[in-house]
Image (cartoon, rainbow, N blue to C red):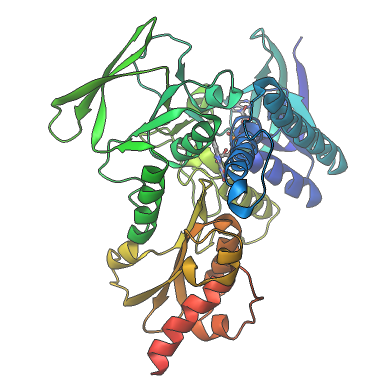
Length: 473
Ligand code: FAD
């Protein structure tokens, strides 16, 4: 007695990719349904990713700002702060719930039907849906499907079962502040968690198997980041990986080995460890093979530039199709899939996708760095210019001179092809650079645009002027 429903578009997953695709499909006049296994809409990003991490990073910033008040002559009677973890969690959870409720209202406003349950393909036009008791409750017959089922945290295969071994979702629960915390993986998530737990009072160490933190970053940005971590007493152990982990009542013992020659380096004890080594696609719970959908050797669904899988009526977007795993990439891909299904000749043809790490100071980059420009097959002739924030009035008045804005120009066309920023609000500043690259702006376009003074984004105009002067002289 399984109910059967029909829809034109079936979106699997209500993360940023899924809900964006669904809203656009419905706006384009197609009958649309979303299937989501969890109660809350919003996916990883809203529930256990972007939003809770940025809420806690805001708390970290408040704590750090509070430490420096006496420098400005703002004196407090009792500068000692105390943390009420329950209240902080409540504040964070209220944000999540508010945004999730907003999504329900938006779904209603866009006339998108939401069904809760775990979806699995029966064939390329039918999805079966299971409730929490693993009972099949519904079958949905669809014309088109958009798979936006996201990703999950990667882990090591033989980890001891211990509550002091965390993944990002555990770390965001804020159950305790360990005195010592090892973060395994110096990627965006690892570095953001290091920023949060350092501010909350943990002694943080970061373990990274590669010989650099985020090797794709510009070298000058890495230098400032490394100095910042050093000044905060956050040790970054590079070129090192885990040999084994064992737990005792007094702590978690981590045996570390050299990444290059696997010799044992040392055994350190921590109160907690956080595994932040990456994410893997949720492709194995969908019975993709029943619909004939191909995945690559890592489990990512293969798609073309229109987000179409090898099965013509099935599309896939977001983390499940591969890197970079970013919410804004998923959203953009969702729009592309919707437009293509509605019959328009759309493609994913964005030149660039901005990346941000919300450390303190923030790091943001887009397009080429000097290093990636050097590595291109076309051997781009480039010129890079950097503007240190010690030259910026706004940075000096706001006591945030620890930063640079670095731009990369094509020496033949003088067009901007990349930008990296480290500093306060780098996440906001990068937007202008992204727009300039996407619109094909050259250095004159940037220098002739009046940037307000004093601002941090003025650094873009000032950096561009350095290059402009060099080509005019
Ligand atoms: P998801 O958000 O993963 O959503 C997929 C949805 O599909 C989920 O709700 C899942 O329950 C559902 N689902 C899966 N399988 C099924 C099924 N079979 N049936 C029904 N439903 C199913 N990105 C940024 O851009 N900026 C950030 O600041 C940022 N911070 C992050 C911080 C952390 C700690 C983490 C973990 C991630 C962060 N990310 C960030 C990454 C970002 O969260 C993801 O890139 C984004 O959520 C991907 O969106 P998506 O729609 O592809 O998938």
